[in-house]
Image 1 (cartoon, rainbow, N blue to C red):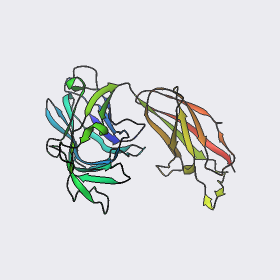
Image 2: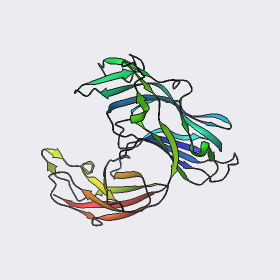
Image 3: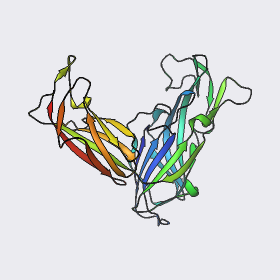
Image 4: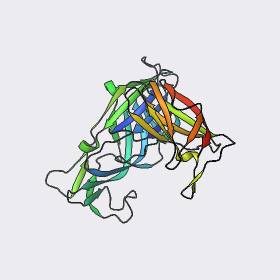
Length: 309
């Protein structure tokens, strides 16, 4: 099973989401599939909830399958909008798995005191993930998470990985309910994760590629040269909610792409807006456009800027 694990923030729910390609059968122990994990969060009075994930593994009938031992430190409250890859193309044997585990080597919690100040509680006063110059007010206890790990029980107590097919697994991590004071100890917080897994409908992605016609020179606005990175793509699905995405030239080939990741299949309208001060621009084909997202695939629309002023 080839595996990709990522973290992202999208909307207002605390989610560890996994996109799995595996069979719906009982699993023969042969073949491979793909897995993507996303980490998401929800707002509450916790200002920051930072953890360092030092290992990710699956517990199954064949023992432990280690997916990653590369340490990653992330804030559960302010995850970036773009997906960051934690594990890419790890090999996972087909079989039956009962738990996903995240081994945590440390963390800290910053809470709102209600008077305009905040306090920080850390797993250790010298935890490397602390902000520079931070004053630690107390201890954040993370019982057993550095040894046996943060345990995520999978739906129906098992995940059967076979050859082919596609599933989406969402693991819901509730930050608001996962940290609390032990009775009578105001100088300590304890991490007791509230976490569960569930299967949801398949998702796909939408992408817009934007290039500049060789005959077109983008203007200078407020003494700054405009580039295609200054444009914004907006995707709107059947729910009528516009979702903005920034353009970036990831390959350095002059094609700037904006991508909307892990959205339900369906038709999405696509529009592009220029930076403030750019009064007119045209594209081929004309805007707005559209893409049709299908499960486990990326739908792409391409546009060329043919005039700008």
